[in-house]
Length: 225
Ligand SMILES: N[C@@H](CCC(=O)N[C@@H](CS)C(=O)NCC(=O)O)C(=O)O
Image (cartoon, rainbow, N blue to C red; front, side, top):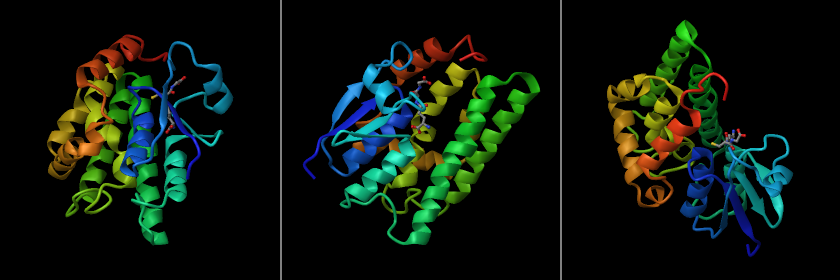
C-alpha cells in the first residue's frame, strides 16, 4: 500500500492519539499535521471534515475520513497485518459495542457533567462513575480489553488510562472519577499496563502540558465551551 497517509490531529486530543496509536501498532508510516483546532482551523481541515470540523481527520491517498472510531475501522480493513479487531464477526461486534460504550456512555456522561451545574452535574458524574464500574467488570480475568493483546477497545479507551485527571481539572469535575478508579483494581492494573506499553507511550502527551492545556482551554468557562 504505497499511497500517502496523513493524520490531521492535535497533540492533546485523545481522539487523534487513537488514530496514531493504531497506525503505530500496525507499523504504518504517516505524515502528521498539527491543527490549532481551538484557534484557527486550517482550510484543509474544514474541507476534509466540513460536517464536524474536528480532528482527527485521516487522509489516505487524498481521500479524507473523519471520526476516530470510523478511522480505526478503515485502518483495520485496509492494513490487515497486526489486527486490532477480532476476526470472528461476533467478537468484532462486541469490540465495536465496547468502543461505542466508551464514547457514548462514559465520554457522554463526562461531557454532560462539564456542561451542567448542581444536581444535574452530580448525576452526570455518578453516571460516569457507573460506566467505569462496568469497565471494571469487563476487564475481569483479562489483561487488555482485547484479551492478551492490546486492541481496538484499548485504543478507544486511551482517555480512561491517561486523560481523566486533566479532563476533571479542566471541566471542573472535582476528582470523583479519579477517586472511583482508585477503587477499581482491574481498571487500575489495565491503566498502568496501557500507559507502560512501549508503543502507547509514544502517543501520550506530557502530563503537565496536558493538565496546563486543559485548565487554560476549558477551565473557568465550563458551561459555554
Ligand atoms: N467524535 C470525534 C471527536 C473529535 C473531537 O472532539 N476533537 C476535538 C479535539 S479533542 C476537536 O477537534 N475540537 C474542535 C472543535 O470542537 O471545534 C472523534 O471520535 O473523532
